[in-house]
Image (cartoon, rainbow, N blue to C red; front, side):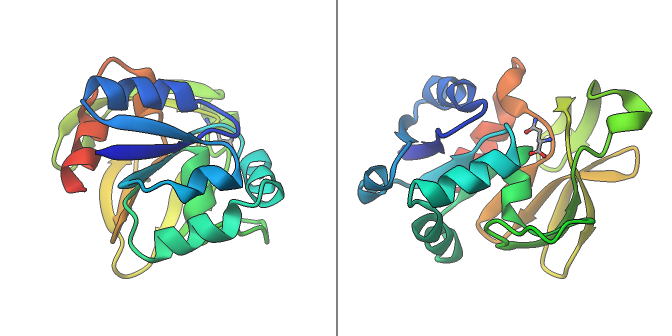
Length: 187
Ligand code: GLN
């Protein structure tokens, strides 16, 4: 199985390591020609969604990737990646791919909890998972058809919509491969 990891900015190498540990082959998406290869799934890593969105367009990858996602390519999106998928960003007119009918709130934990925190949260199909949040978003609302996979302190931090799975935390940074394993299983 071959998984493409968006590699323009952010924590993409960590995702590759986990996927390789689980036996998947990985390729990096850095420029438009990387999209000419076949792959079975896509990982959108954490980082800075504004920068990633801008680079995707400048590097000529945006339209092709959006089309692939809309056509059913399995996606695992973490943190900034989840923001890229969201149809709405609270208090902001920016839309990146907009393929998942949810509203996300960026940097949602800023004032209350500091920009970094950890929690053991329950995740559908997995159980307790060690979640690391770094300037993380949360999902403010979901439309019909979106499955809530995890909520921590009444905030939605894991969702699935058709071929797209998104989490607000960083499963690639902890010593627990179960979120990635679940993603690979579903492909
Ligand atoms: N705050 C970042 C954003 O808005 C997301 C942070 C992350 O990916 N760790 O894009």
